[in-house]
Image (cartoon, rainbow over all chains, first blue to last red; front, side):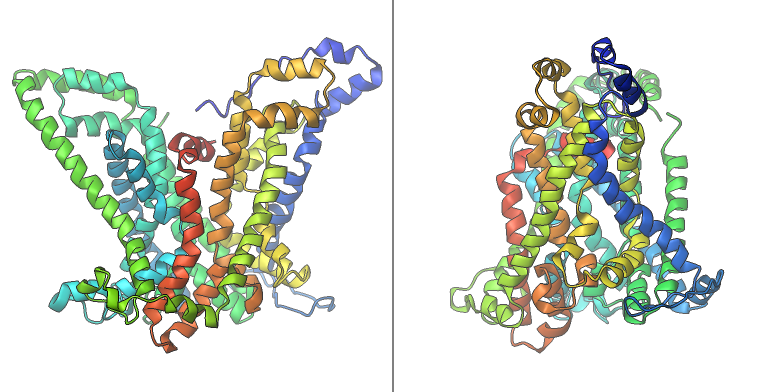
Length: 316
Length: 305
């Protein structure tokens, strides 16, 4: 992808600059096409309103005794240092929810990378039914999680299809109300739902692996498995890094699935930080504590992303 | 291992294996391989599609049958009543309408303002272009967890946009991935086209409208598809700011039905899957019809930048 390289626009500079000194000054300050700034203005305003200022506001809220007040009421929010963080992390539920996300990521991320690469590599060599297979792979990704959770809820319910199939082998208590199975089921569900997106990413990356490498490896006697390991896997490494990063960020955002599938239970076994942020921040009126949890979560994600970049990104 | 390293490593590996009769082994092996590939892809397709089949079957069952025999449609157990049952508790039509307004607003903003900024980033030369492009990339990695509480405070409390479609649209208004996609496509338009039009004295907006946009029409379709699934499927944000039932998009009202109403109804399985089907069908149909615009290379470039 040559996207990042900025193209040189061969505008005839002399023609414009010859007009009058005012124009020349304007061009020097704003560039040749100041209209560009005007065209981008709505987007920049949007970014400031929806991303930049809320991020700053989030940090401010986390360090102050913040509460919901009636609109227009004149209230003061005293600075409290790290009190919100201390309050949040002396709560066992909060610690547990971070552990739950850890379990989720340990199942979801490796499963996602392995399955999406395998399926993409297989799909890449297929000639028949290509369109059908591609659509069927990404259909869960484009469908609302609320709709799909509705189905999984019954598939994995106490007297659901899965338990009916397993018969005496069905876990007791059942999947979604089982302390040690609730989070793994959610992790498998999210892997299944998101896989199509990562398959598309890998398919794009596979187009960039030079064919000659396979031919060369083949004439050198490398079998399919060997080719996969020494040509495909290193060839798609940038995509693998992207899959790792995106699936980690998505996993840390987990809310809808535990909210609908398990209600965070049983006994908080599938509660997540974002779910707790909703409960504490919106339901219990403690936005300052919720904000503190959000900041710790984001710092955690940044550390994991940095480690992934460090160890999976390579030196190129 | 980089590609270069792989290139170097491959011959060394080959040296050890060339003594074997590679030709005969590989013929049988290729066959096994393609069978294996077919099996893997087949299992994948079944795993991905089965819950959709189950959704359809479930929504049509008069009496819920969650055993294995329930997978085969039984003519004596078919009904459309489940759609009525879920519709009597949450209005499917108003849910669809709210989802449509939410999604439509986001699409409109993304198409208008996203195309403008994409064009400015690709074609025009102005001070701040580099910084703006960096911002577009950066915005994609800001996690929503961090924004959730302050946005809720700002939009619902300070701006008073709770239960308002504008409040729903605001955080999603311009899809940054679509902006990158538009920029990518404008970059591919030959520069001479713009220069020729400029010498004719055409104004920039006209240039954009009558020269650039017709050339990147496929990108617009891809951008619409990519943007559509965001708001249509979004749950957390509209769930936070809409409390009035008649203002909720379908994803939110269906979720409320699942968590608080379904268990007290006669056939929760049928009602929930019926609601799920109504929520899922518009997107699935859209993606099947326009599937050729949702190809890997576009998406890859959109995400990778």
